[in-house]
Amino acid sequence: MMSASVVALFLLLTVMGAPIAIAMGLASGVVIVAFDMPIAVMAQRTVNALDSTPLLAVPMFIFAAEIFNRAGITDQLFDFIRMVVGRIRGGLGHVTVMTHLVFSGVSGAALADIGALGKVQINMMRQQGYKDEFSAGICMAASTLGPIFPPSIPLVIFAMAAEVSPVKLLIAGTIPSLIIAAFLMVQIAIIAKRDKLPHDTIVVTAPKFMRQLGIALPALAAPVILIGGMVAGWFGATEAAGVTVIYAILVGVLFYRRLTWGGLIEASRETVRASAAVLFIVGCAALFAWVLTIDRIPTLATEYLLALSKDPLVLLMVVNVLLLGIGMIMESIAAILIVAPIITPALMAAGVDPVHLGVVVVLNLMIGLMTPPVGMSLYMVSNVAGIPLHRVVAGGMPFLISLLLSLIAVTVIPAASTWLPNQFIK
Image 1 (cartoon, rainbow, N blue to C red):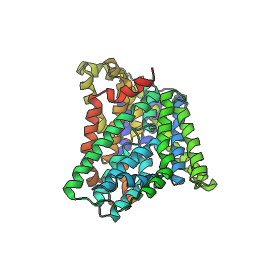
Image 2 (image 1 turned 30 degrees about the vertical axis):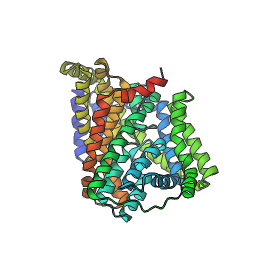
Image 3 (image 1 turned 90 degrees about the vertical axis):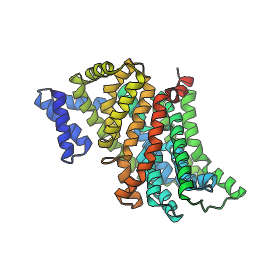
């Protein structure tokens, strides 16, 4: 009864236009009061949800991305990758994918990638004759790499919600992100040949290439240091975030010499804003999930799913369909915090590795960022590039093919997620 009440009230508030976090928190609070539960529970559950060491990584990864952006690293990275692959047909599409892949090694979030890279990429493609729909679509599709490739804020959130090793989950995202990038680049090559997309106009000479390589090297080294440190056991997820922040500051001040006190203060302000939004969602979603747990929803879900099938692949496919639908209507971090405690026990009982499950869940919900009506990537790209929303939606739809094929590959090949962390972390 409690679960039905909280879900019904949540849906009503959402339909009325309330933000997802407000709808979850208010619905949970009303149900707690209505069912004569102690009001103190609301404070206890939200504070307990935020009292998490792995969660400390979230604001630090956001801070590192802000510092890198203000140090001018994104521009240097973009120019270098243009020299590497820009001259082939449709090269700026490939540049977009590769830039997002490398920048995701410091950002950990899809919207951060779009904010830092989207306007530059889309304007460059616009100048060289690409259609806005293609530019917007590939920018959104490539941004899904941010929450999969380490560091990944959604994977850290899943680790906290499902009580899984955050280091294992972060490392697990490496190969799936490469699979996504490969599918996207194959699709770009097909579109480039079909539509005769232009070559990049950048002029590349050996001295110019070597000079740009030297300039871009600190940005290229960031994900190597991060992943290498975790694989070597030098630091965990939270320590990795701290190391990334220190590295970003040192590179911005000593190497690029573009990071000023003003830039550092502004990066801090943006970090506080972004972190407050994320942590507010975490607290409200944790309270919502607790109400469901009190009503034995995780236990009932486990019984139902195992009655449906005990085949791990069948259950994963069922979860894929469920999450693709949830991703269309719910913010991704809130969805992770609500869904993870419900489905994880059932799938683990069926033999699914929780690390594999975490990657599948996050990839599903990142695809949801590109799908209306709630897909935040759609609105972000529309805003940064000045492209009408309906054209952004039209541009993103073809690239769902590559993302869905990647999802299928990651789902049916557990080793894509589990092999790398199992090699280094026992």
